[in-house]
Image (cartoon, rainbow, N blue to C red; front, side, top):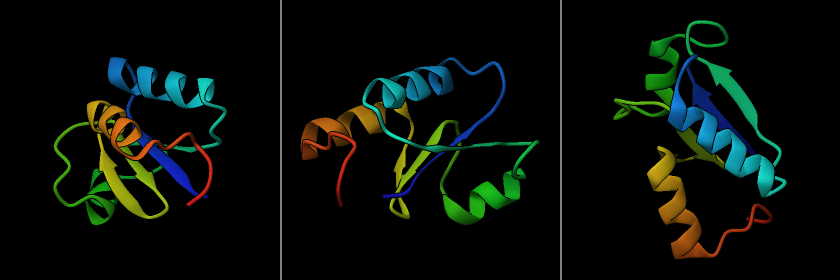
Amino acid sequence: MSVTVYTKDDCGFCYQTKKLLTTMNVLFNEAKIGTDVTREELLEVAPGAKTVPQIVINHKVIGGYDDLLEYIESTGWNGSGY
């Protein structure tokens, strides 16, 4: 399973996302905009992204923190599999 979280410094929702995934024992890659990737590189992965974080699970763009919560609730995803 591949999980990438695109973040930036001083972002509360980025912090909450990383905390949630860590609590769920999900291993994830963090890609900081401006350090690890450019804004343009983020937009190649998630063309409609207007905010961070942007969460990508198995090459599927989930969206931001609220989208991640909805994804977990609607799919029952517990950080493993698919």
